[in-house]
Length: 98
Image 1 (cartoon, rainbow, N blue to C red):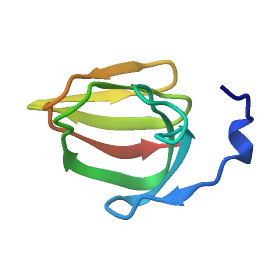
Image 2 (cartoon, helix red, strand yellow; image 1 turned 90 degrees about the vertical axis):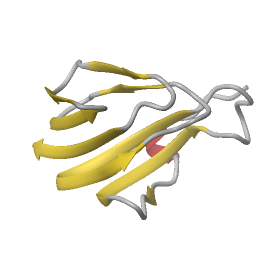
Image 3 (cartoon, helix red, strand yellow; image 1 turned 60 degrees about the horizontal axis):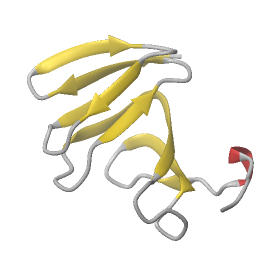
């Protein structure tokens, strides 16, 4: 168990993405069955299509605008949107505004 400020957690470059960083707010070293990540995608950034075959996950948009693909559907999302992505669902992201 711990309490931390997100601003104090190291940012890492996401190598497979463009202009995107990740912070492991709750990582495998802390949570056995729960992970929490914060992604920061700069304008013009993107994450290629991928999927996870061993877990569901969620996204919550804090600010900016994204185009997100979920299987064959495309959505435009912004602050306050919640996205649920079950395992094996192909998904990708593209920043489309601040």
